[in-house]
Image 1 (cartoon, rainbow, N blue to C red):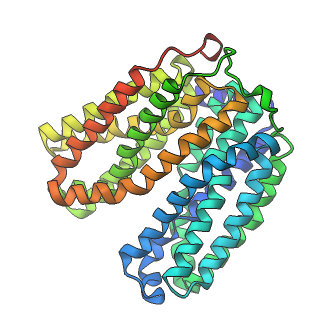
Image 2 (cartoon, rainbow, N blue to C red):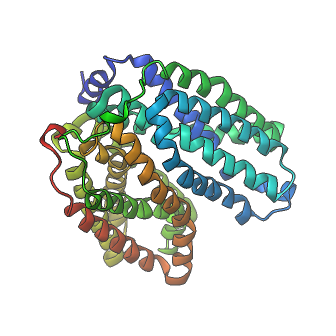
Length: 399
């Protein structure tokens, strides 16, 4: 049996592989459904009396809503368990997606995306990781990594689906179908999950070492995660255009960005297979060093074939590992009850950055060119490394 398969089995034997596979499928449906503007924006814009930039601002409104909704959900996760909260969140998402199909202008469009953000805060990635932590406590890392590997495929699966639906039935019918998928798959899965995510009593919300982490620990951890996320999401949004400004033909730029995505998913799988050798803090620091190195390398040595290949491998692996450690790092310092509060609080700055980074990086690319983006990325990642390096060693029981 391969190390990856061994990791998956170790993660799922106790609580049932079918439940975890179903959770991954529901997350793929949830995230995949939200990507429909990437395919259907040219159809939405004239129908709603909006330009393309305004259509793509819908997902940004969603991430902003997720940011502000997440901290307020922490008590519900503790009191009712993640499964029940996720069930309610999926119901909100289904209704919001259906409302987009009825939208006739910008007001209805942005209200729909805002509602999607509220539902997503209760049912998507952060909520899923809280659910896994409520099931497995400090041993949830492998389950989270497995979930990240699977959900990394959501765009690849749903872009062709939404494109086909849009071409044959139109974008409004596509919204209704996506709403039906969320209602028909996600709600039952999360209701099933509710049986395994027991509510955590308030007195359990203590550190695994018996003490709460200092505010300094929380701030350093949040800064490291948020700064790295700024680079990850900002760079992903403009990668194709950045490669093009370095002189690559558009087809090659698209192929290179796609290859980087494949490497990112592969890195998540490698973390699942071999991640026990390093804890999340050590892995996060190592990956951040790799991001800084990759940005400096591409900025200094240009867009030759060898440099681009090395960049895709180094940066792709590093950003893929950072996607996992964003969720597993708090597990070093918080038990399963406190984890819900910590990740919900981290979600506020994190989702604001996810919403703001793509337009900010796009503007930076226009104003300063590719090397300006690479320099800024290296600086942000360097600051993240400083914050992560100042984190104290985790409690012995979390290692």
